[in-house]
Image 1 (cartoon, rainbow, N blue to C red):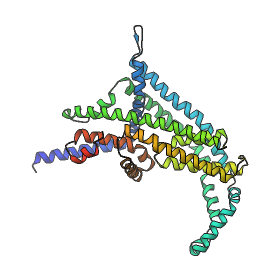
Image 2 (cartoon, rainbow, N blue to C red; image 1 turned 135 degrees about the horizontal axis):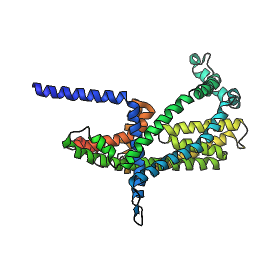
Image 3 (cartoon, one colour; image 1 turned 180 degrees about the horizontal axis):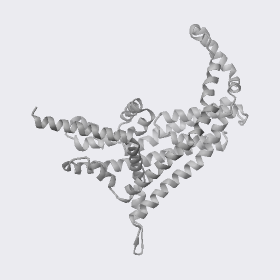
Length: 369
């Protein structure tokens, strides 16, 4: 290998290392930019519609359309969370005040049978072990008062950081909305001149696919919220509780697979509390069965109708392919990885098709795009 080629490879390696270090060091700013890019993708269709409005000789300027769109985005978020927070917080307040030994007493027959079965089949494991004690200890740790005090003690620091984050994201998002293609031009700056046309084509495709994906996820969450809320209400749960569980289900739905399980566990816990508190007029077994049916039906509607439409129009990938990507992302980065898996995989496939389409494996992987 000649000296010039070695110097070229060393330069590339050093450059990549410096970029990775800067991304790590300024990770908060990078997240602000990513969130702003996502919000601008969601708001771009509204900006385009507003700029087409013309009354007489007046046309809506892009800066005004961007400002209105940004206000609309934050307005929706604020309306949603100011409606949601009182609902959810009241349910968690009820959970915090639960006397878990009393809850365990209401299931004493079933718990005693399970204990007896364990002692009979696994005597060595069952020595000194009690399911009742373990459950009381576990749920007590989850909702103990100290945890709530610790949470509220850190609220001031959280709010100050949140204000900085909201201002930064709003400022960046406004300019992404105002100047069409600003993010794409900034991204292509890191590529050589001869590659910038390919980068532009890739970013155009990414933008189109991600708009469909994020709007689809938003619609999916709203549908799941409504189906879950009205389904639980029809099963006899109080309206406030039903809509709180439905809202949490809609939010957690953005976490593939895991979110639905967490929402169901939360729903079961709340139903148990309501039953012990004598709020429900129907037996707990019947209500739990109905809640399970509601979540099962909603999950079937999501899997059969909603997800295929969203993934077919955005990721354009096989369901098994999507599942494996989500599984790997979960192992690598937990819940955050699962949240980012499909958008990141879509971006990678688009760029692979644009830059490495000469490879047979890439052509087969991106055939539907």
